[in-house]
Amino acid sequence: MKKLSFFASFAILFALASCSPSTKIIGSWTSPEKPASAYQKILVVGLSSNLVNRQAFEEELVATLIEDGVQSTSSLTIIPVGSAATEVGMTKALETVRSTGHDAILTVALLDQTSETRYVQGTTTYAPMGYGGYYGRFGGYYGYYGAMTYDPGYYTTDKMYYVEVNLYDSKTEGLVWSSQSETTNPSNLESFSHTFAGVVVDRMIKDGIISVPAKK
Image 1 (tube, rainbow, N blue to C red):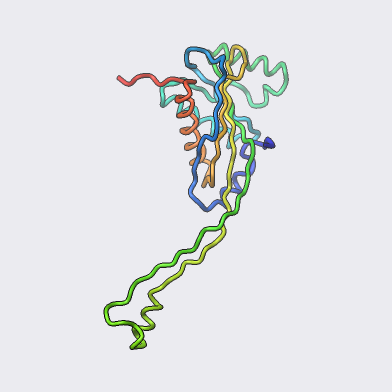
Image 2 (cartoon, rainbow, N blue to C red):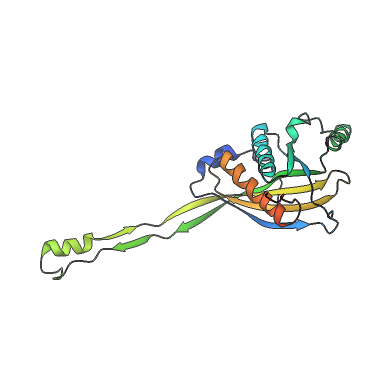
């Protein structure tokens, strides 16, 4: 899929969405060289030039990870915006990541966005006449057909977003885990980022990338 600027056009598409939102993981991959122990402290990085959208997703992922007992930090709090754009800047950024004790880096990027038009079938409902028939009197005949109603079908357009999340080992910079998700008809950025974070973190736990401390 063609890589797009991270959530750059959400403002317009949120206004057009009309159906219930849903997010699901459509695939995940774990490196055979994954460390035996789960990662303990993760830096979350949104790949976006839109700081509002980037901040929303970074903060939701951080909050969800912390809620599940995994230390996590938004990249916006320790790496100046734009400072890692050069090779020298990237080297300094990685030094900061390692010196602050982060053993993994979680990146989030929008891969693609699509529109799909589908037809919603109409429905017919019927309320039967009472005893005595309906042809003998106008009131009965009218009541029979008046009780039958039809809701016409219609076309609706679903907006779908495909987001990729990658986890890199901060020491080796190697890709350890990757997932792609599909979100349909997000109503707004807040609900999208919140639901997305929960789905992604749940899959990370399921795939053994992070572990949740046992509750006492």
